[in-house]
Each structure stands twice: as C-alpha cells, then as structure tokens.
Length: 113
Length: 367
Image (cartoon, rainbow over all chains, first blue to last red; front, side, top):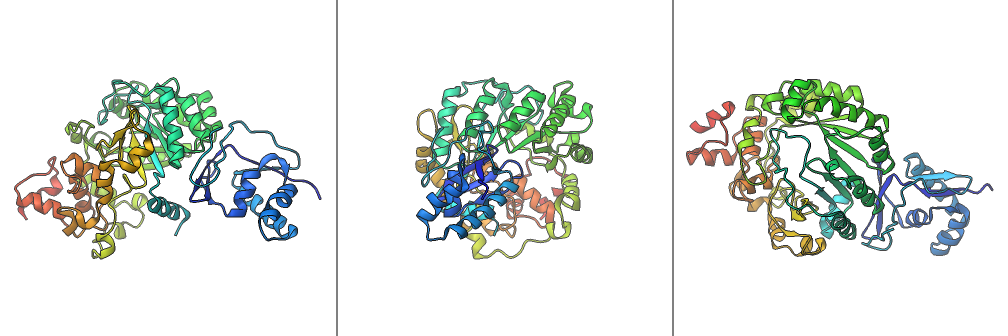
C-alpha cells in the first residue's frame, strides 16, 4: 500500500472548545467540528508521520476499531478536509507551507508556537 | 441548526468570548465625514502589549478576531500583529480602506491566511467617495487595493455605509463589487461619536430612503416578509438576550479598554491593568449587560417589535439607558413595518422629537 502523508494547512483557524476542535478554512470559510478520532488525526498531521502509522499507533491504540475500518474512515475524513483546503495530502513527506500555527491541545487551552 | 449556531450556543453556555473586535489604532489616513472616532493617538498599546493581549485572547478561547481601526495599516507592526494572531490560531478578518495595500501586501495577507478583508466603499464615483473620505484619490487607490487582493485570492467584502451624500450610489457600489468579485453589504447605520457627540447623525439617510432599502428584494430577500408586522411576543422573546455584546463578543480599543461592543462604550476594564480573562469573567459592567433580558427593557419590553427589532443596546446606552430604546432602531422598525414602536409612542407622549427631523416620522407626533 502506498503511504499517505498529511499536513495541516496554514490557512486555517482552530480552537479547542469544550474538548472539541473547531476549524475554519480561510479558503472557503467552511466550519468544521472534529470528533474525537478526527481530532487525533488532525493533531498527528505533521506532514512526516505516514497515515498508516497514525492509524496503527494512535487510532487503533486509543479506540476500539479494526485497522482496516479505521484506515478507511480516516481516508474519507482526510479527503473531505483536503477538498476544503484544510489538510494537505501527498505521497511524500510534506514540509511546512509557511506559517507555523500553534496546535490547540487539551480542553480550553492553546499552546503558543 | 447550523454548526455556527451550535458554536454560538456552546460559547454562550460556557461564557466564551467567541468573537473579539480589536482596533489596533484610531489613526487613519482618511477623515470620513461620518466617522465616530478621535484619530489622535492617545497612547496606543505597544506591539508587546498587543502580543500579550492576543495570547490572553487565545487562552480565553476567542476564535474570531476582527482587526480594525482607524486604518490598521497605519501601524508599522500591522503585519507582525496579524502574523502573530494567525500563529495563535485565530480566524482573522481585517477591516481596512485598502489605500495602502499593493500587490506585496495583498500576497502577504493571503499567505497569512486572513479569512476575509472588509473595505469601506462609499460610492463608485470618485467625486462622491473622496468627498466623504476627504482624501483626494482615495477611491482610485482603494479600488486598486481591492483588485490586487482579489487577484491574490482573498475574500473581499465591500461595506457600503449609506448616508445622505451617497444614498443614490448603492447600485454603483454593488456593480463594482460584482465586477471585482467581492461581496457587498449595505449599512444605513450612523452611530454617535465615541464621546457621545451626535453631530455625525446629520448624515443619516431619510426615512423615505430607508424605506426604499427595506423594500428592495435584492437587498433584503423577500421584502414582503421582511416588512411584515412582527409576530406576537412570547415568553421565549421576553426571556431572550438583546444581542451578543458582552455575552459571546466584545471590543478592545487601541488603548486596551474593553467594551461589550464597538458600538457600546461602557468601559469594563483595561488590559493594561488587568488580564483580559479577569475582565471578561469578573467585570461588574459586563455582569450587568449579561443580566438583561427582553422582559427587563424599559419601554421596549411592552413593544410589539420586541422579537424582531434590531435594537442596539450600545446605541441605547449612548442615549442614556442601556435598557432603554434606541431611537435609530425604533425608526428602522417603524419604517420597515409601518407600525409605531413603544419608544416612539413614549417620546411622542412626552412631547419629544426624534434625534433628527425625519419626514416619515412626523406623523408619530400626532399619535
């Protein structure tokens, strides 16, 4: 299976509200609220960790789901966010596209870069 | 319910200031005839103070950040502030006159992920626009700035404040917006100056012109429905909140003063002496604003328009009572529906005349 790499676009705004990540794309002003699993994928989207590793090491480790089902759902989620310019997807590791955004972590807090 | 409505509901329940409007300067390169600001610098926050404020706002979970002025690009550190705000994850919207925006600035705004830029355009005719801004050549420069921003891929909104001097030019500005691929908004609201002076209210359009706007389906959608009599007032309306000011939104001035809204000059604290989150959580002024429900409004609580009126508590405050009616909004409700408001009837019975002579409102005095 060909590896997929994912990176957060710098053209987004994000916050953790009540444990839930809210993201808005500057490209098309679409607002997203991420589920727990989607939040894990979003936070792990560093451009250098393959999707298969994110699914195996993070999603399957933290949630009761089979690797195949988790990968399938993750891929669908990624395709959706990529369509809105929120995630960048490549078969090669991805470098930063400019602005280094802080990643909101935990509940009700933001970590500065 | 849309995700945005859910987000607002959650912010309200959790006491989160979801949206903050931050003016980074009151200085401006234009001198618009209707502007409510004093453009002298009375001690703006430094870059370091604004960076500290932005960290506090992020910690308070502010998500939508409007950066405005004055003209924000009058500050040399404007782009540094925008960049820092973006690294903290804010959704940034910029309000500017675009006079100082060339290709380089437009590209930078795009690269920084600014979600939207709003620009005031008063007319498609230079002689009208420039007469309002009092800056010769300003329309030409503003439109050039709009074009380079659109070419850079930025979302642009042309905000058309309507006054007596440009009331016939809204179609021209709308056509300009369509030509450059920008959104268009029209606002007939002229507010008193921050010091309470009402001299600028002379620029408000007439009631007849306002009526024309409210009956224009290209602006309001279904005009018949928009201008229909208000539905009966029920308990949900009586228990409802007047607006988001102080609940999920607030305003911070270039001097660090915190207000419920840019149109609501009730000082709630200063971020130079208190952390933003302390002001947001503990200000007695904000607590008072938050305590007000529809049923608590003097005069307006008995008004048939209570559920549909655009009553601005800030404008009411500037008239002397944050629980009272706002004359401008009474006028809008009346012009829109033809049904007098409780505020107008109370003023008429007290022998008071509206803020300015509005031909369409004269009949109210005889009621």
